[in-house]
Image 1: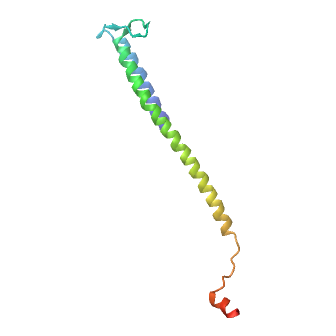
Image 2: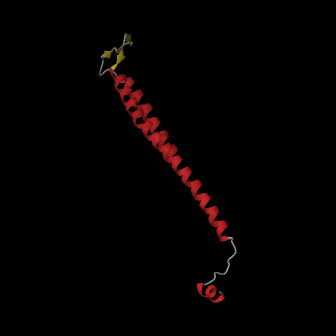
Length: 110
């Protein structure tokens, strides 16, 4: 289901980009970006909007990815602790049962 959802999102993004690029007759303005002496070739306004949308999506995905990686590491460590505790529990269950001496029995012998 996750793969199907991802494929659908990728298809919608590709379809949207191709639709916008084919129908750019609405906005004919082109912009040039200057940055410390670098001057870009004229860029259609539509591509600037798409670039900003993609940049915003990346800025949202990166922190989410980093948080998921941290949570996966925590889960991995906790699973190791659980496995160690289960191993210890199994070893304690296999110990033979010994009789416990009551305080009364000990005091009577002395």
